[in-house]
Image (tube, rainbow, N blue to C red; front, side):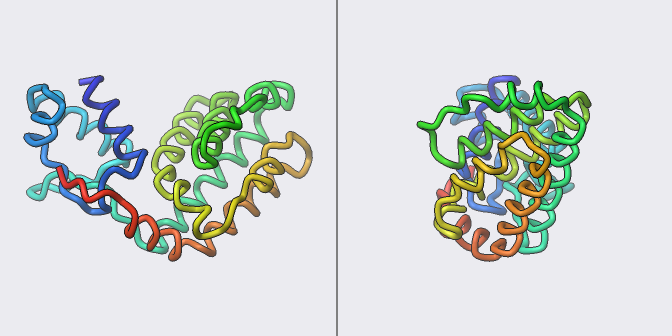
Length: 196
């Protein structure tokens, strides 16, 4: 089950499914070379993490967002990151986000940076919420540069551990909230047509 979970989670994180695409457990099991039970268990776990939509009688689907739903997710991410930076000792926070590899894509650097902020947070529930939001937002982060231009300088400012960090987190996410409809259109236009 853990292998199926990791594979599905990574496919979702990478934007491997068209929003709303049906995720058929039988076809996924065949592709992964496993029985259907671990795939169904993984899909249920992902549904519990809100990474997959599930409905009785209709099965599992890749998440579909509306403009307002995406804005809400960005707003939630800003709120939990702000809570983390306000409750984490500055030295621990600075150590956690030091040396984020600059060779990855901006989307990957952002995800790693936000996950590290979550890892440094003293509250386990907050850590889990940040990690889940990071995965849910990653497909959108992949296309953000096309909608907003390169934002590596804003990410660098956001990661500066100082009195203005919470404000930078809010500014960073407000910019994305304003561009949510453009970002959503880009995700829908660029997502692979995988419909397993």
